[in-house]
Image (cartoon, rainbow, N blue to C red; front, side, top):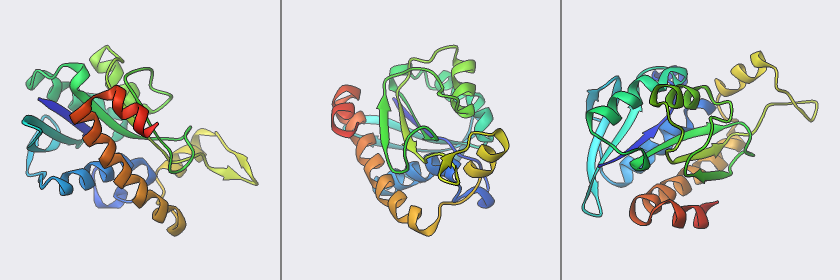
Length: 192
């Protein structure tokens, strides 16, 4: 079984936030494959399907982003998912808005949700798709203050950014398909 997890905060108030782009990508992918998030399991909303003859579990943790590891580790354990078959989709401040990067593993890059997952799994060797949201700009300069960052990731995309993000979400769905059907190396060469 493959497990694909999108990171985000639960609740309508957060639905369009930059931090929820992982949820949005997974929602779009699920809709393309007629998968419904119709159950709660291991502190997550989950949907199941099949792709290329292989079982597929999609999950959106119901914890807040910074505690995503709780749900992810429980799902991995419950379904005996090898870490190479876990794919996590999350926002990334260090990538320009609209860029995506696939990686077979690595550190958290400062993303609190990824820190939580790595900490609870005690392993950083699992695939991920990073979706660039850029950094907040003040007077043309990147601002990295903690309060500014929190406010930024919990804000919605501007109307102009939203247009770009919609096309990026479609690209991420293609990247997920490629990862599931052809593996990480092929997906990285096509989408990085």
